[in-house]
Length: 423
Image (cartoon, rainbow, N blue to C red; front, side):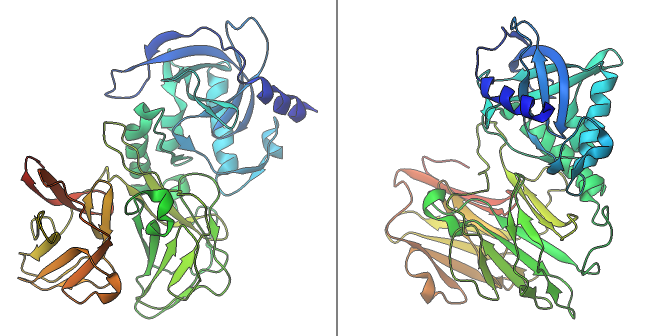
């Protein structure tokens, strides 16, 4: 009955809200002001959703509040009794930790948003803070720092993106919480060495090129194959793709999982989604991006990658790769290895918004070699040192444009500009 009452409250979510005041967003380094409310928590649903009686709205209506910028693992049974809570790996821990923070604050919280109308599925989208030791503390920062939630980028409520993603990378580097690959017990293939490469920005308009979004999974073990049957691949948001029982990566090889539809093979799989799932890393200071998580059947994160890079972002091939472009006539981009060792371009891409060219598998440049990417041409006719972007026509602005060479985490390797453009 109590849960039914809370569910019904969600339908009044978009009723006129209490008048907000202006104040700090509690985001480090951000001077932008937020709208601020206060209220009393009446129920903790999970690690990123609570119900709040908001002060000053002249009612005792309870509103569902979805934390902005983070995502905890999903619950399967919510309850006011912590012992009755059930959920996926780390879900119950996140809910219990959140409730302990709220208890320390006397069940009082501070809510913040850039846009008072921000919502997620009829839930207010807010940053939620608790008062501990006489000061307001952002619960999202605490949960992400302790590895009990992942960064969930938001282009609308953007002021928390950079700090949350940085904290998530630190938690991952420390193997805390979600980032401990054996936190929920040793899973299948516990010896496996797996690596993810994520191309989260498809060439052109993402909705028209769903298979241009992909995650590549590498088996780094030179002698043992990895069976991924029952494992799951997802981004920072709930849901994801579960691998069929037959999916196996042979030693030293890789498997590419595309967002859209297609015919499954031993080397390429398709999620069958109707829309992109990975957020593009937009400029303008909004610091959006995304992550890819590979989870075993127990729910442990066994491999991950995120962009844009926040920590340890030095690329081993910075300074060894140079890019130039022919922006007039027959357009082409040239990448040259000026270093002393061979370089595999798999994991790198050319970027000239909104155009993206991700290099394919085993595209190796020896020292002194150069590779040309013709803008117009059929990729089926690719050779070792000549590739085709597959565009129907020119992409560069004749008056001036630029082309960037980056890795898939957005780290800039080199840039070339011509005409009136700059890097």
